[in-house]
Image (cartoon, rainbow, N blue to C red; front, side, top):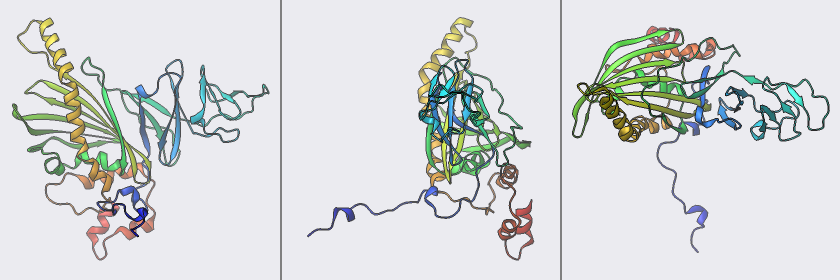
Amino acid sequence: MGLSRAYGGPLTEGPTPASASTEAPPLPYPSGWAALAFSEDLPVGKVLTRPLAGEDVVLYRLRSGELRAIRPYCPHLGAHLGLAKLEGDDLVCPFHAFAFGPDGTCVRTGYDTPPPRSPLSRLHVLEANGAVFVWRHHEDREPYWTIPAWHEIGHRPARHAAFEFSGHAQEVIENSVDYGHFATLHGWKKAEVLEPLTYDGDTFHLTMRATESAPLIGDFTVDVDVHGYGLACLHADMYTPRVGMRMCTMILPTAIGPNRMQFRQRNRIAFSEPAGLPAPVAKAVSRTAARLFEGLLFRSNIEFTAADFPIWDTKKYVQPPRLGQGDGPIGPFRRWAKRFYPPEPASTVVAAREPGTREGASRVMR
């Protein structure tokens, strides 16, 4: 008699995803704005449920275009409002047909009886640059910083993609200052910092220049201007002078569960109008180039980012890191990033020190 089919499957092998670890997550959920959707995901009348920090958030758009974000359970008897429907601007619970108006108050019941004073639990929501952000803070603080509106380049609609895998949102944002991996993982031939990393409250900024190579083109430079907003939003402007191409990229990692995240990316491109041509012709050439190459350039940009996906999916957050010459300013970045988490208990700080070294203690405490 042969082996049971239940024991004939492939053996478990390969790196274990970070979310499968039985250890406690090394980092809590970060506070601040987190992207839960693209604007296109939320047409008027749609009710959408998305995860954030281990909980569901229900999103919907009013007829005026305004967005609403609420905690997911009906205050009446706890039905999940992700199953609700919109009647005009009223969100109607699927269980007893209690209806809630745009301000969250209960405006009627399914029995035509006086509505109770049981409002929805609303969350702060922000729509900016084609993405929908929801505010979460470990101390329930009101929003004290925002994500500004950026410029819109080109005339073509933005392209976007979303993925889900293991890892922590901080690892994604931290990658922008991990200069060493741009050569070893992404194949940059050379990278130089034009403006060093600076911080301004809950944001940071840096500029760099990369040297890349491509068939038919050879070596070319790309100027990269990066703005970071908290631990869940990066905006990068890239300019390639040799071909006159500009790309505006938004990187949006969102912590959805222990060592689990969703990753969104949104791109727009534009080409400079060639000099020496009549204005109408130059404009037509620029627009034609954008239309012909936007798909290829978007896929190339996603592939560039996706080289990090298996690393984030399986890596372990090492603190303190054993940094070497050639690494970027990861230590200062992590000290800045602490502002988005609850204060560390004193016992945790003491335990994290390297035994017998003053240097180890000072590194943790800074």
